[in-house]
Length: 325
Image 1 (cartoon, one colour):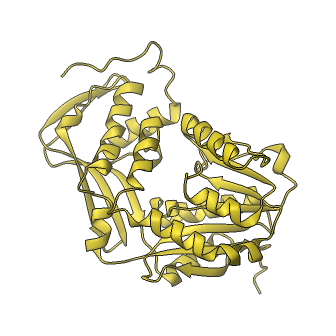
Image 2 (tube, helix red, strand yellow):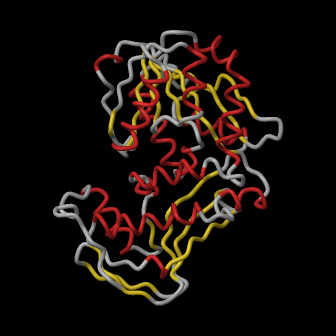
Image 3 (cartoon, rainbow, N blue to C red):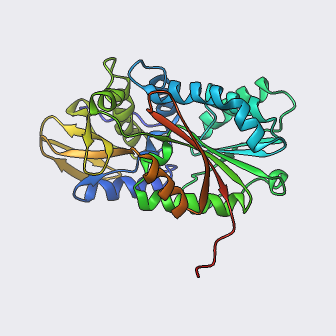
């Protein structure tokens, strides 16, 4: 296997946290790498392609639901809020929301700088006159909002069931952080995928065209490119399964043969059948979702679902913490 070509200095300029997470994840048992590292430019493009697949119901279901509830959202949220979106704006969902509520500003936060700038420019062109303030950051770490929006009332927007990618304890931590960043009195519109039959869930993460497989395998390409890796992608296959006990879809990269490779100068071996765990997607019932929001400091105000109950949108409010009796 030929060593990937790396642009001068690219490996040395890799995100230090990416390097630390990859080396730690390959060293631990079971092996696992945080899903946020999927989203380099290519990964972001592949995920956008996934959202258009026939098997992948969440995006079209959530978008249709947003359009359906648009009048109610406009009444409940009101005008003049700064919309803070955790993750770069989708070409479909974000314009629907922005068209509903007449916001004062839009602040997309995303770890993928190239994709963030591209999506921000597209939305700015679509909504001339709307101030757009992109923030390149990992929203799993402390985020400083732009000075231009700090005094404005805020609406957090967290669509796509991204909260489901986190273990419940991590999801609660993130919800609490969002409350700190947005402030008391803020509102949050958040998407959560519902529990349903695995015959629907598994194909959404293992499509017939292989786009999700390419998305998963792109993580190996990124490791090779940015961390001077020699991982042979052809020695791995994409695997998606339903973990009923934990109510989640899991994505793995499974070695199809014994394999040895280096990353950042360190050697690793994996046996055939061994997996690298790359993503979880937790699914929530109504009561589970409300408890999760409450634990994160948010008071649910309204829940909407599509007619088949596949996907839910919650509108929640950040109220001052209650003093226990």
